[in-house]
Amino acid sequence: MLYLRLITATCFLLWGQLLSAQVLTVNTVTRPPFSMLDDGADTGFSLELLNLLAERLDWEYRINRTDSFADMLGGVSSGEADLAAANISITARREVLMDFSQPIFESGLQIMVQADDVRQPSLLRALLSWDLAAAIGIAFLLLFGGGMVMWAFERRAQPYFDRPLQEAWFPSFWWALNLVVNGGFEERVPRTPVGRVFGVVLVVSSLFIVSVFVAKITAVMTVEAISGSVNSVNDLYGKSVGTIEGSTAAGFLNRREIDYSAYAGLEDLLAGFERGEVTAVVFDAPVLNYYVQQGGHRFGHTVGQPFLRENYGLVFPAGSPLVEEVNQALLAMQEDGSYDALYRKWFGSQN
Image (cartoon, rainbow, N blue to C red; front, top):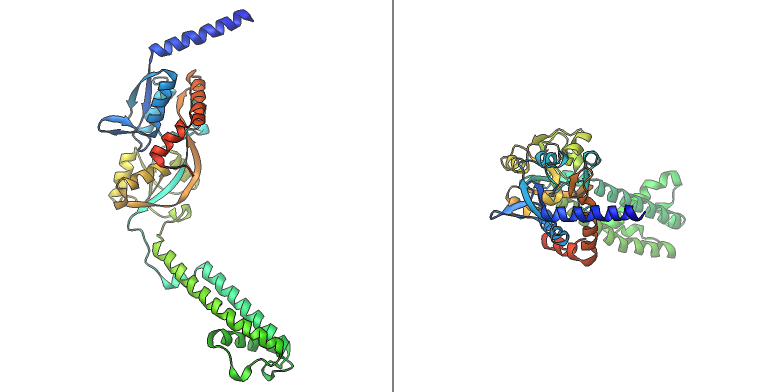
């Protein structure tokens, strides 16, 4: 056992010395805000995280910026690169070929649509909305119920309500409706004490009912005014959709059987979107939101909440001895707050 421990310790020592003398090759691809060039300098959330890891682990590395996501991952799986850093989703298919670090960022997919993809408000759509239909249904039930309660109180004292149950339901409803709309009938004032109290309650509550209807119509019209033709994944069917070939977004669209145009890279995708080749883009939420914030709002805006939650990680060749020490360093960064500080720099406070 002693010899085995000595051999193991010697191997780790030699490996550490080898790493200190070796310059690691790190593949990446341009994916703002995770990896990009700023005045010729490599920057971005993932690359700054990599730099913090290198300082802790005493690494020397060089950045190899590839032309495509596939080239970046291909260099790692073949062993030409020691690792890759960008917005790399941790997936089972990739895990078969390579090894991932623990997650470094929680993301998801989102939809971006053209800036002019906004519907004009429509009174007909507002009136046919489910929310308004539910409000009308509840109001009718309340009016019917109130009318029938008044019939029960007044059928022996008020001639208008003096009729059998099978004939009383509509006159009672009509009385309650007129009470709400017109304030009631002077010649059909409740005569019993309980009926009069209940009638006052109905008159006061009618003010609330009318206010609810006005507020509901206003709310529905407001939603119509700010809603576009694409608001969720279900609205993408039949639309001109674009994403990056081989991405997790492409896999999601394939599973949902949504037709899309596949672009080779992010720049091509955004350029096609700006030219109007596609009316909607499905891709990583932080990438699309960064594009909108950096001037892309002239061309489009994101809609809805991120979906298909996924995690990003650093990726290594299968069996790489770098994975364990990177995971230990990432845990240490999360514990001492340095990861949170980097996150806030790029994305603000975490929710």
